[in-house]
Image 1: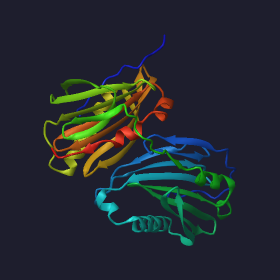
Image 2: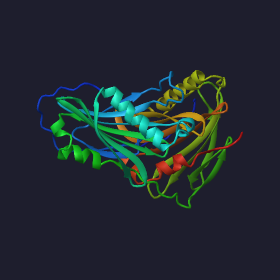
Image 3: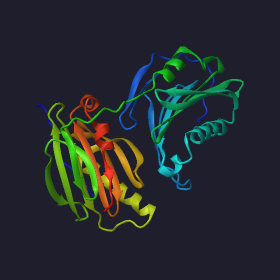
Length: 332
């Protein structure tokens, strides 16, 4: 029996490595939906979500994707920067990233250079950790997100073909232009572009507050686009309270879709905090779809954007990034 996707929306809202010889296997392409990149790894990486460091003002946490081979490791991490941290400027941000890697590895700088990825600025550095171990890293500042790619292994392997392939295979998904069918939708002091003529509906959240939702489908890809907003029972007065509301929103979204969390990152839209989630939509323990959700806390309300598809391939040919980034926060 063929399973179909049931659509619903609930709006409540450097580690040490050994130095023994080891052969690096053939490279495979890894794609991060929430990271908006692809890169070649020697094996499927383990993904770690690092929550924001509350002792560091403006820290939004990071996501780490690492393939540990024992004798060596390949790693890419990424995290967003708040407007306040972006104000330091590109050169200072990249200088700080390089200094952090040098401190964490407790190594000696061997070489460094400036480079670019398209029009985006970056740096590369090689660090000697000890006589048996070295690190090679690249940093790119892309819009308001910093990516760190690094390899740790023997000094002789730093410039091997597999390591070169890892660094040079890094690609960012390029933004396209939203088709004319995507039109502005005003909702709760925010604006987002959504395709067609979205159907509105209202309901209540788990804490009995009202929610307003609009939903439409792109006929070309059959990907469903959803936008909504709803008040929270007790508006947040502190950053901790906002994080609690966003935690509840994440859990409500997962429960509402019967989904499993795949990726998560902390984000801001303007100065408004939020989360972006990648979810597997499940039915009877079988994956029947993929969803990307962005939840933003804005002046006593949660704003949610969601894209749902029956296949990950369809998400790759749709306008997920452009839809999410079309959200504009206004004055309420």
